[in-house]
Length: 210
Image (spheres, rainbow, N blue to C red):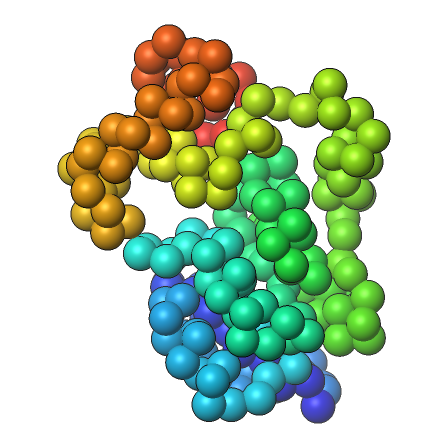
């Protein structure tokens, strides 16, 4: 039996995923969490065969939670489940230790296959992610500028593009307004952009918007 910890801040999403998995013999959703912190607390207390982890969560996002999980138990497989296309978070997830990356719109068809493959000790890599990996390894000159941002910088980039104010970003990430401004300046410098308008245009051109 594959015992799974499901982590997503939306109850309706967890319910939908549970319906898929409950219809599959040999897979059991043994616990659910709505935040990264709840997930970490459960991992300290219980044993799981796999963590199904959403990326877009408040306070502590999926990438941050993934890194913390790996500190607790580096051998625990984590399958990232995201509303974002592969080019946005797949590479960051794999580099942080994820065993696979699956978009939510393909979950109904591929979720069970991904879980079973990962629990056999393999990685679940879609053709799109495989292409990104090849570019990352062999074609450094072909990388988009946003791939050079840190995970936190990329997270703040997406929030800026979404239209969130510095104050709101600071509140949601539990950092100061000044820190948000510092990150914004660093992002613009790294990407050789002049202002937020340029940043938004870049995000649209590179499919980084939701």
